Image 1 (cartoon, helix red, strand yellow):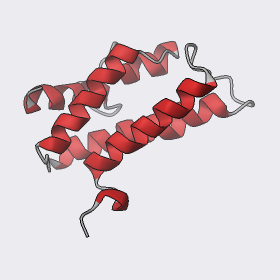
Image 2: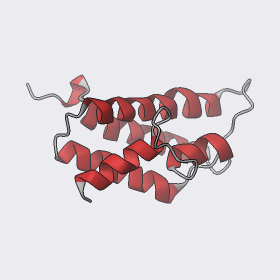
Image 3: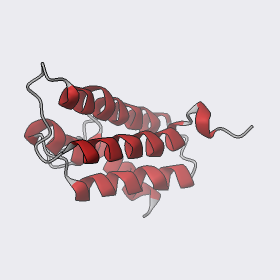
Length: 119
């Protein structure tokens, strides 16, 4: 994947971006309560590409953080809360844990979690 394509995918998924699209992974997750595996794979590939290219663009990194925050703090946390009406329609417990771990790993690599910094 080209870096410019990866940046576009991130912008399409970033909730505060003027390029946000309702048909993006995050758009569908928010509007339809659906975990779109294909769109998630594209977002995952985009973040991995930006990690590989050592993207330091502040806007892209901020957008990635917003996406990560939404997925982890709003969608997945709300999905687990029995008091909340939000449920990801096509997600069972096993998929929940697998996707939560994958989101954490991919975004930690890009955003520079202490776990992945060189000593």
